[in-house]
Image 1 (cartoon, rainbow, N blue to C red):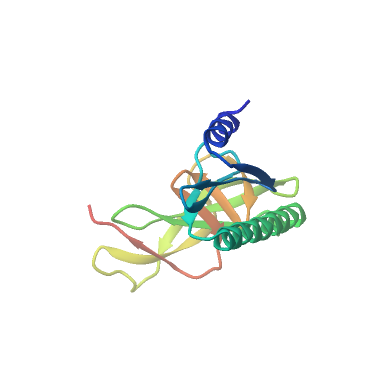
Image 2 (cartoon, rainbow, N blue to C red):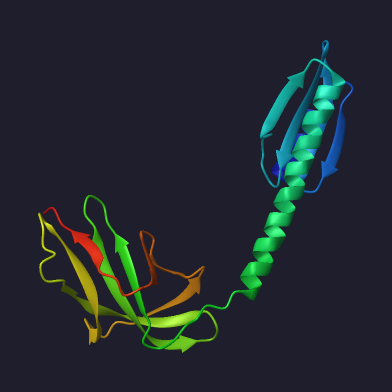
Length: 189
């Protein structure tokens, strides 16, 4: 038994006049306490209920349960739609494409990467390329920059998957296909 199943079983057995119902990813325990009708609802693999309410009438409790079931129906449809979209997703990947990232804390760093190889339908091999400052864009510790195609900074290659038109370079840096417009860059140190 999972921790969730143990928690639900213990909760259900301790309540008088309780009822356990499973609906899609929901586990619903309804019960009575004093003059109130109560419900506790777990979703997916949660250890504790994410909803736990009491109501003055059975009808209000049942309406709430029906609302939660409708939410579960919508979630199921959304998950199925996203899964189908992900399966059908094929990004437009070409050797020579440039990806740009804008990232940083208290300053805006900009990096450009050029696709040097396409592997399969969603994997690319990148190399970081140089950038040049747009003349006249220099400001107070800031400027606008553009990529310099084919001017690689080093021999280091990065193999990454493209997901939703995004390449996750590091945990704090995401690159998107560059639209050719100058990118804002700033520094404070």
